[in-house]
Length: 140
Image (cartoon, rainbow, N blue to C red; front, side, top):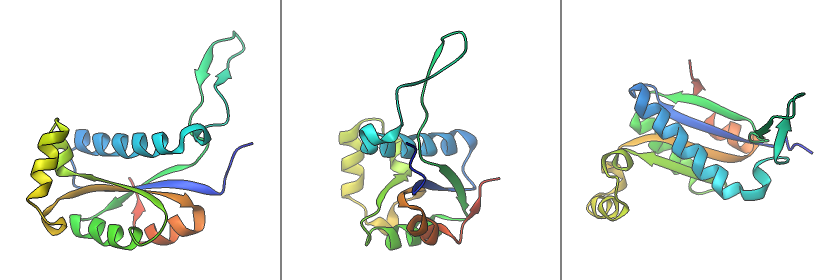
């Protein structure tokens, strides 16, 4: 049975070039999907009349909203990190570095205030996730 009690809201900066926006949203979605494991979907396939199987999509709504700035995303992160809600932050350094060791070295020399946030994903109960992200408009 499908679970409508939870959702994923991804808030991404509206000034990102298309490829960076797509990359950020994809990584947030992949992280959350991986963490959800077997609860991600409601089965293996949807099957067409002619017996072609299509892997099921997430059983949870995925909503994309827009932030006007890095600062707005950092404020969201500050509110989310004190909760028990699953969240993921996609940062500029994740685009700039393809090697995890290089990425770790880059972050070791920076405080959070000096890290550029591109997107924040928040997954959990509808009311909590919606309350945390209510000030952000839908992506247009």
